[in-house]
Image (cartoon, rainbow, N blue to C red):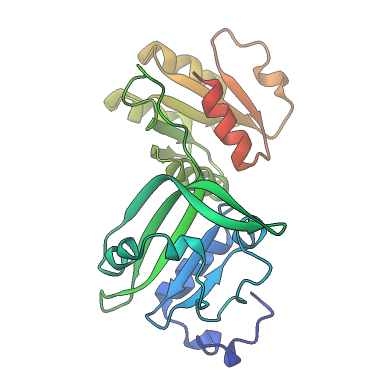
Length: 262
């Protein structure tokens, strides 16, 4: 993206790009989930490295070119959904199978598809951002209704790390709140019920472990995930149940940690 000669592309030089496009690209290029952007009715197509690595075919159009005659399946599987997004509707399609070419074969791969309309300064929809998240697990027979959509409280003082984990959790379909320290987390826990506490171990002030212990006294059914950039020795001898993750972690490890809670 940085080395592309945009003056030769439909978007034109970067200094002429609207703010909505710049913001969308900043989100897309700093998110580990595959993302695909269609800009304007000219259908200029942009995507991040995660999309190129996991979804795009070898013949995919270069970033900044128009959507090809045979569009990517994320755009072509449901034309009516695309028109709804152009009309301003945010859409989610869980476990949608997409047909992809991989290694010379046609495969059907399920994704949770999220379509977000992007508005220009005049309020009109100027583009559509598509996020392809790993397919959420189908609800088990007899499972509680909120098992698939958890209410998660994220406690992380690093703003970049907080942003990324919240985006991944929302892409899984969960409802997420986030704060930067244990004291703020306890204030939220005092007024709202949560299913999961996802906390860094090393926090300013109250530690994540102390937060987890206190939170369980207030909400005994709360399930806890700890993340730490240090060894897991800090969470290896807990006096309460919790799942531990080592930083850095990827989206599959995060999904597995959520599954390990059940």
